[in-house]
Amino acid sequence: MSIEKYLEKKLVEWVHSIGGEAIKGPAASYRGIPDRIVILPQYGGTVWVEVKGGTEYGLTPMQRQFKTRLMDSNPNRYFVIDTKEDLERLIAICKCYISE
Image 1 (cartoon, rainbow, N blue to C red):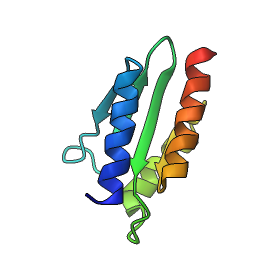
Image 2 (tube, rainbow, N blue to C red; image 1 turned 60 degrees about the horizontal axis):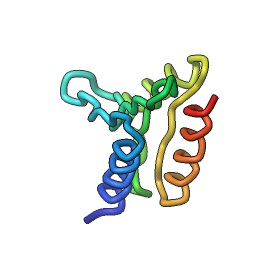
Image 3 (cartoon, one colour; image 1 turned 60 degrees about the vertical axis):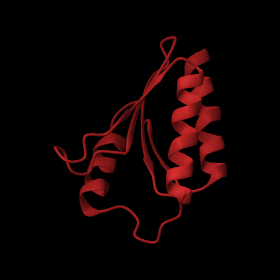
Image 4 (cartoon, rainbow, N blue to C red; image 1 turned 30 degrees about the horizontal axis):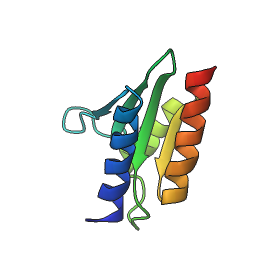
């Protein structure tokens, strides 16, 4: 299993364990949309997650465009996950969103 698939699997497992949803982005119908749209429980809101797993290809032009749109939103809840540490940071941030 690639690191990208591993990280995405762990993200989905954690989201489900807290009662949230980790919807697979409809990439075929909207290019550039992040891999997962995470809906957190208890008024935690929505988080957009692109899982790369340290792959050398990086974000595509369409992904960069979508990232820019989301980064301009308030609050900014767009994250790129490359490593296990990135995933741990995202989980910590999401826990803060849930408890706000």
